[in-house]
Image (cartoon, rainbow, N blue to C red):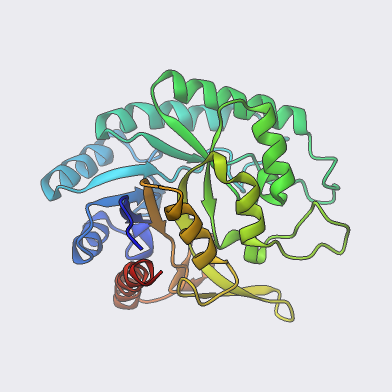
Length: 292
């Protein structure tokens, strides 16, 4: 299958420092990174001095940041907490994105309230906050994309659709791996895991960007065994084939989770393994695309 877009990835899974992230990107023959953490800090949380160093290294290497993988309104932010931290992250991100020429920023819709049912999630306050984030970014010529992760919109496709209805113009980044381990709150308890392709099929007209990871849900262990793309239950072949077949020419961002899981500190490998795993994942995924 002919893909006319570009490849990128969460290169902090290849290494914590920017030099290693750039080296992994170059090893793959790519020129893009989806920036999340550099030396343990999200790119919008670096000091101005550290960001200047990051900017210089990227310019010297000819590598661009295609998307800020921000922590804005993510799964560690509660809807019951003040909105200030998300607004502050947004205000720090914008001038840095402009300096780097970055047009996409990943956002979410705040953590799911524990011990609350799916219809008791302070929807209106979530909608209000995401509308405000959407307005601030779009006024600056930047596109925020909402990820179906461990947040309100990630509870199932019906919740993402409700979010889209209440935040006009909002675009999505669809993650193929998140449905594998996410409860489908649109169904009755005990909640089954989601179907990635079904979720995608209901929201695809709003998808502006895509994250690739895959895995198998191990119910008896209560965790996911992450796999290479196409080897798990993330419906990666079906989603990617449909997306590219419809003429998608944006970015495809790998997030392997095989050697390191961003939100699980217990899953981390030594530096050489991390680097090799990321590069292998990227190479195998390129071959996977060609074989579709």
